[in-house]
Amino acid sequence: MTIKEAIKQRHMVRKYTDKKIPAELTDSLNARIEEHNKKYGLNLKLVIGNADGVAGIAKLLLAKGVNNYFILAGEDTEDLDEKLGYCGADLILYAQTLGLNTWWVGGMFSAGGAKKNLENQNVRVNGVIAVGYGQTQGVQHKMKTAAEISSYEGTAPQWFSDGVDALLHAPTALNKMAFNVKGAGNKVSISCGSGHFAGIDLGIGKYHFEVGAGKENFDWE
Image (cartoon, rainbow, N blue to C red; front, side):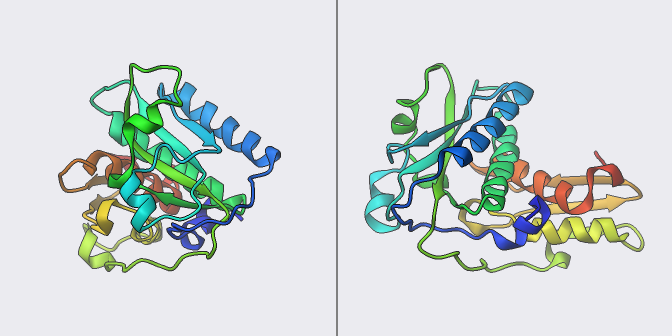
């Protein structure tokens, strides 16, 4: 399965089995994390064997069997959230290609609990992503239409349409899908509403659009 194929295969899964993630897969995930940390200056981490990063209310009401997760963290720079969203999107889709399921916990994470697993305490945590073997494969969330989130000056090329299609499958905080994508020639701009997770959602959106459209076909404005 490719990353592009994983976009449509991956769905939110909140309940997990007790099957352990094999060492060869954790090695692959850690290698992917290391690449992102080096390239973007982040402090992402895969935690195996505890659910400290998930808030108690989420464990009580929503989640079951969460025992592994990615921590989304880094030094508190202006573009931190966008980078966390971008790299987090890559991690959930990469995990899907490995046969794993994920849940972007969003507002129901415990920053303090997650931070206990980090060596560097001088960072900001803004989300965790549960990962493991789901009890189910999840279901498709309610989607908006391309016309509701995008516009293009003139006739949209196929790459733009493909990018928007991938974007429609992106996970966002509270499933708001507050994207606004505009294209003209090979220039594309994207915005994503406001709120605490707007930067995260923007990064997720950019990643999905790039995978769908192909980064070689356009430039961000």
